[in-house]
Image 1 (cartoon, rainbow, N blue to C red):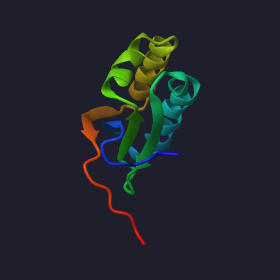
Image 2 (image 1 turned 90 degrees about the vertical axis):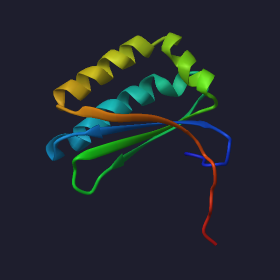
Image 3 (image 1 turned 180 degrees about the vertical axis):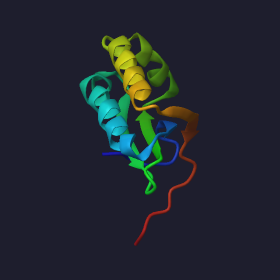
Image 4 (image 1 turned 60 degrees about the vertical axis):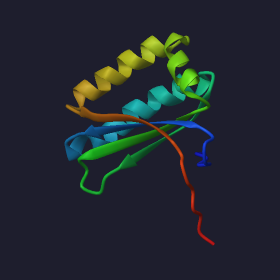
Amino acid sequence: MPTIDENRFFTVMVEFDVEPQYQQVLINGITDQVEQHFTHFTGFVSASFHASDDGRRVVNYGQWLSKEAWMGSSSATGFDTAKATIADVIKRCGARTTKVDFFQVARVIEGA
């Protein structure tokens, strides 16, 4: 379960453009690799995938304990396999990565 607390985690957001018929295929392909590999990486907290209503975009919201943990995942066992498989899924779906951004949660406001 994602946790959104101020100044707690390093957040990576990746946005993809995809044709609507491939939106769920892209999400399934990437999440399969996240579940198989990333969940075992030191410092991984969570990954959420958001599908746009028009079917043309997917946003991945990933949380890590720190930027160093995220960067260190590239040397983890299984990273190369996951990366190659994700790249293949992106290619098969004709998706484009349009943005990769890094964030810290600056403020959280919750409902009553």
